Length: 589
Image 1 (tube, rainbow, N blue to C red):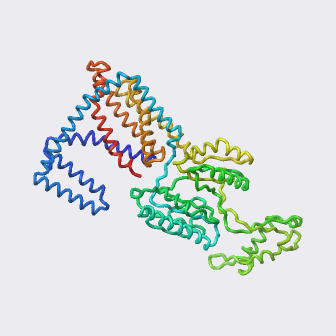
Image 2: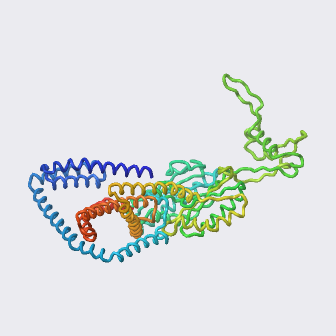
Image 3: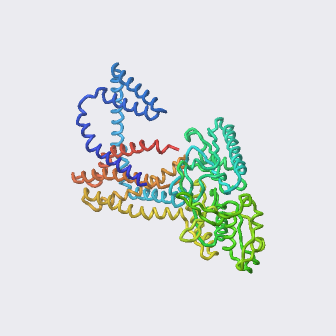
């Protein structure tokens, strides 16, 4: 966010330098005739910029730019450019006179009607503002802290239990690869040209992630990935998320898989739903996490539900039997003697040069590879006797935890999920869970707490932004009050700010209908701030003209009408050029 703000501020600073210093210097030489004329120079710059913008590579751009220069210069020498310039000037003057006539007649009459029916105008404006607030409150534009930026690939990331054989992982990867090729053929049959360009398979890691997730291994025989490389979004009808849904349905579940994610985002962000459970009892955490996963599965649009529990490798879990307890053997005694047999006990150190060589006493290598050696082990008791291992120990086979995460000294687990913003919003799901399900579930286990990590992060950011926003409003008020020498007129200008929000909401709703946006997000807030700047600028220009005409002796009614007519053209030019500049970005999918 700070990078975006700094970029905008520097752009505004250089814009002010250009307006106050560079532009007057250009206007000072406006009387001098340009080599190609104003029309020729404008045409030349337009063609060169278009060549650079639309050329596929630098070489083509250079060739097109050179060709544009040649054509414009040839037209200048032949006199064709002068004729085109005359025609362009005539068309420009005709358009200008038509615009002036429209503003001075029809627009003036419209302003008079609006002022005559000012109560109705105010009521309609407030109704439009209320409708925008209703659209947001009604959930028609769900808010997400950061909307996902979809890339041109779908990566199926597979995580199997650690320690599992490579053959089992390869079988699961083969299932993903087969379903991916099936989807490729299906889409090719439907549209004639499949949007799936390539299918890449990786074993032993998740290369597309680029780095290991905290608390998880970066490589191993239990990891795999299959990636669909898609054509650019502008050249296909289906979105990246829709193709991922088709692939997910075609593949189905994978047996023994701990986690299977179909990632479509160009930039990896946090999960939409992230619920952290904290307690000391590990079994209670497992039970509650499973219950939350089942509860999330009931919500439409919530998918890829998982938790941070990661089973470790196969292991033997030892405990002392009742007979062993009767002999005074503790779990520490049992574990220490098993460790001495398999890992070894240091018996002596030998000095060899500058290094110490440890001599360990333990089972032979062959004995350490067999469970029979464990079961044949004899455990020493406190009185110096030895008893069979099976007599004093109970052995269970299972999997431990690959990692143990602690928060505030207690064990913790995170339950995460993704949300389809076209069907629901993460905020709505979390609000409903927090209203009853989560407190009721957690209260059954004393000492357990929960927190909504995603909501907490958004709340912290909002708490930091609100004071800065209020400070910015005060700064705007002060900067307006000083030149206007009034406390009332800055409030009039700032009263138009909510209508920038109204325009943003209706614009988002319109673009949502075309599939360009899914809802509101933090970049939307940045857009509202930018729109507020345009609104303040237009209102300030209008109010300055009203004050000038009032000082000249016009009545308030005539001053408002004449100011609106006089300043309609600069306000219109500012608005249209801003809209035209943002249009390519707005239409990008």
